[in-house]
Length: 146
Length: 399
Image (cartoon, rainbow over all chains, first blue to last red; front, side, top):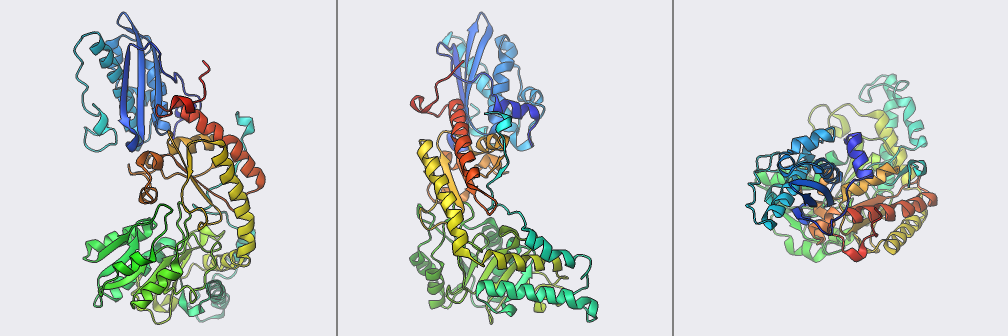
């Protein structure tokens, strides 16, 4: 059911961990729902120079966070914010329909980390937007999407 | 760990079993050589009819029943549907209340829910932390409108064996029929329908090394039950449709093999299972065994590993050639974790982190060794990734 890319990311996840001197940390999901994602980022100028994750969740959740942390590295905050969950799904070579919400969690964890950085800088948080996979109506990520 | 270490280990025998060569051999002649329709009168049909009737005797012997009390059908789900809907329909004038438990298989639970939509009332009894039903709760739930008590012999997820003798006694004391879903129990729990006070019993061939798509419902003589499948007069008019002759023959041979030496079989399987449980609990901290410590199927081990999620455990085990199962929501279409694990009081996150290993006849001590080697590393890796893992329980990072 999973692509080879997903399997590669679950067996050899990239960017696992936490940044001791993180400039922004975003956490979404809840253990009761079966997935929780925490992404920390390092920012220099307006660029993300490092991103790490810790995830409790299924293979799709781990692969999505592994992929998303790699995708934002080197990007400006605006570019990173623009990464959609569909971009994450595409990079993984696809996800089963029931697992698409995991990519939404990854997008939201990135955005939460960026907003945490902005808040720390005394800037306004950007509007998070609704869950892209179900319009905020049915998937497991809905209640925690911020 | 690398791919070279990979070896196939199947430990999901509660999901299904391989079919034994003896069973396949028994079935083989009934595909082409003895192809006759058992309902036909000519001699082409004689051998197929004999095959079906011999299988009926084999099933009856295994359950301590009479052959005419055995009806073949397409599997455990049909047998459960038939028992519950059939009795509910036949006894509609007598009552409209059914008692079952919160941890039944969905073939029972969803059948009961369907009946609720038709106006029946259903009591779903709770279970204790080990998954046991209290026969006293059954008694308290019985009213003068109760027509059926349905409690599984043993649970498919956590392996807990129910006190069905006591439950059957309570039901009968109140003149209520007792059905048990014995799909996981056949071959593991000795069954005598008279001694256990069972009126209806469901079983499924592929759970005890028989063919898929085969099952049977034991119906005690004199029990009022409506048919589920209407049509021809097969199975003494109770279940229409031309018999799955090779499947029925295979089911008969399989149940004969499975019940020939239950005690000896259980001893071998349980010894491996106990070593597996000791090894897992001893090597992986923050782990609990789900289900009853003693009153459980000899082949069942069910764990919850804190801080990690079951589907990712399965995927990593699969990458090492190990086939297992989980009660996590992420492995199913729904977002809810296993109803069984929630019913025994597990918090959601621990239900999500469950792993079921069910042993079978092809497993060896080497398989147990291999799992004890791979599983701690898999859990360790996932805990390293998890944000829930306390720092003290995490393997130091090396990057």
